Image (cartoon, rainbow, N blue to C red; front, side, top):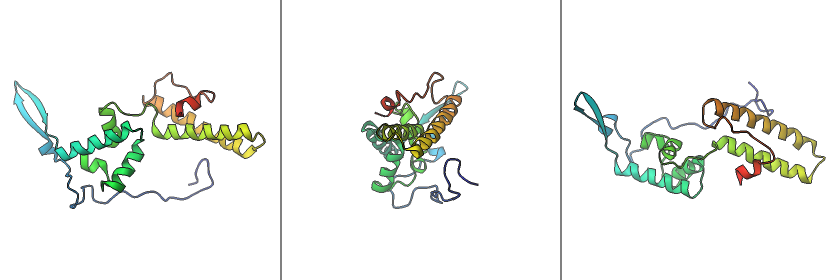
Length: 177
């Protein structure tokens, strides 16, 4: 099936590693569910005691350190993959990068895909300010902004954006600055 806003019909995409466990040469190990949670029966209630491995804590600390520097979750994943040899953070820590960031209160306010679409729309608007007769860029801006509106509607429905959030092209440059 063809793409909505481009001419392509390709099916190529990135492939996840077949083995969900971290490689044997990696010193970090994925926690077992039985190891991670030890349950005690106290007064007919289960109290879960979380035993987190120190290596998992190190990965979470490095994720938080990169987030404090201002990196997006996808950039953090690329750095961990290329520099630290961690192919999938979820296979090591048991949770995804964005969930770790939400747990530490470092998650971005606007979801990453919406942020990049807004950034692209701002760049096209800047181009159109200098080149007013560029009809193709004007058409592409309409396509990008329609994607922004569609994504915003989805994120409002899933409560990842506040219900009062609205994309405005005049104030969009302050969102991505």
